[in-house]
Amino acid sequence: MTHDRHSYAEPALVRTTHLELELDLDFTAKVLAGSATHTLAWSGPGDRLVLDTRDLTVLAVEGSTEDGWEPLEYSLAVPDSELGSALTIRTDRQQRVRVSYRTAPTATGLQWLEPSMTAGGVLPYMFSQSQAIHARSWVPVQDTPSVRFSYAAHVTAPPELMVLMSADNGTASRRTGSYDVVMPEPIPSYLLAIAAGDLVFEPMGDRSGVWAEPEMAKLAAAEFADTEEMMRVTEALFGPYRWGRYDILVLPPSFPYGGMENPRMTFATPTVVIGDKSLVTVVAHELAHSWSGNLVTQDSWDDIWLNEGFTSYVENRIVEAVYGPELAVMETAIKQHATVVKLDPLSAAEQAVELPGLNHKSEYHGTSGLGPLKGSWFLAWLEERFSREVFDPFLRGYFDRFAFQSINSEHFAAHLREQLLDQHPGVVTDAEIAAWLDEPGIPAFAERAQSARFELVDQSRDKWLSSGDLPDAAGWTTHEWLRFLDAAPDVWTADQLQQLDREFGLTGTANGEIARRWYSIVAASTYTPAYGELASFLTRVGRMKLVLPVYRALVDSTGRDFAAKVFESARPGYHPITIAAVEKILASA
Image 1 (cartoon, one colour):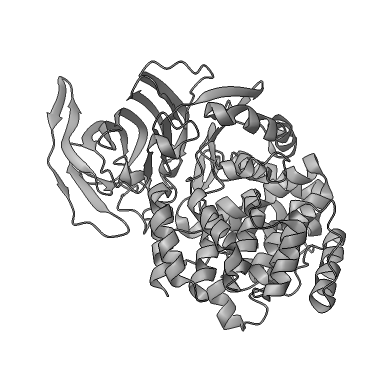
Image 2 (cartoon, rainbow, N blue to C red; image 1 turned 60 degrees about the horizontal axis):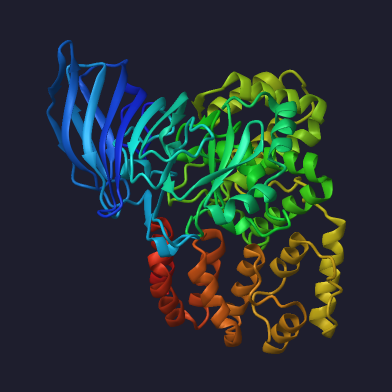
């Protein structure tokens, strides 16, 4: 890989192989200050090192010498609104280059929370989110997944706070104000992560545990108690877990994602901790990234399907092994419906925009698009055609062959040909493979997941919509409720909303996934009696998957002004990534 259009770095000329961080956390100024020392491997001509930055103040740049350090010339380019600024450093091809800097209070990869925004309400909190290209907002780095490096960090912070990173943190929550961590395995920059707050540790097994605020730690450990079993299942299928520990940090509700697969320390939303384990597939997904994404990594964001498509497939295998095939099928059916139901009426040309071939280089918009679902569907199709007895060893060999490497779609296609297709001729055709990898849409021959329980849910919904007879929903799982709501019309009558709400109390539900769809219907239907709880939900939760559909539904109906008013109240508690996404929705009205 010589160029990643989402990065200014030039890894064909020089690469960071190890990073040393000296960081100080200033909660008053909301800045992180210190230095980043790059150990470099030069492989091409020239003497310049180009790093990615965004809104960083560069204080000094130095290169190593036999006697210590010497100043180096550098320039910071005019910033691009999305990519930030290229930091170009003139070197003598030194092995080590040190950049002293500080972040901006508005760094897109960091969120600084006041004590009032935490569970305890006493101490402040800070956490990072580096994916996709936000690491450059808190570390000057080659911010491309094609470059992998080990790292070590020394961090100072207020002594009452615990500091954690995506590294070997240990399990003792000793608060000293000075912390040293090491990540010995090479990782891409988007997996750099840091957090500081009132954090305690709760063990779940010999090599897994939960970090969280004291109010949440035991609840989360109970919710995620199956983590060790998930690890054992995945190792049996796809090879050893190669990262030492697997711990989970449960963040405040403002965290913009369900989870972030930072190695050794998954960052997770508290919205999945509801007491019944119905949403812990988030843990299965982030754990699966320890093989697909963290171990074998896409080399640019154009090939994100290699991370997310493989991870969704492995996640489904974990869910099946731990919780049974019925739940795995329901999970798959929900994902397929969410993607494909809107494509069915579209022409092939329109589908090319919505669901490209897996090698398609779509414009980067900070989201994963729809390729990941197509990728996981493709892998499931291969499994069905070749049988698990053949496909599982193939996938395990893939993880072994490319361990701790960054690859692209062409690398995978060559491996697929060499290790599976050529060794088992006649099982699939070249035309079928091309339909998956190169052509738009889902191939016509792809079979959709079928759930017997969902068929009953569909019958209940259709009967209720036609006759008003309420479904017999006693004992329904989260997934059955999601099927009931997801496959329903977007707009309902006030009588329908009142009837369902009166019987099942959906307004005010503690289940974020159900709330996401229910409040989207409420907004699209302009059902104002539920607007109070809808506003409370949007203000309390910052996870984009949950709040963005509700904002869209408000804007697309008659609630744009109401949405803007709610956003004004919610904004102080949102992550910068969520803020930008909501602003885009409001601007589209």
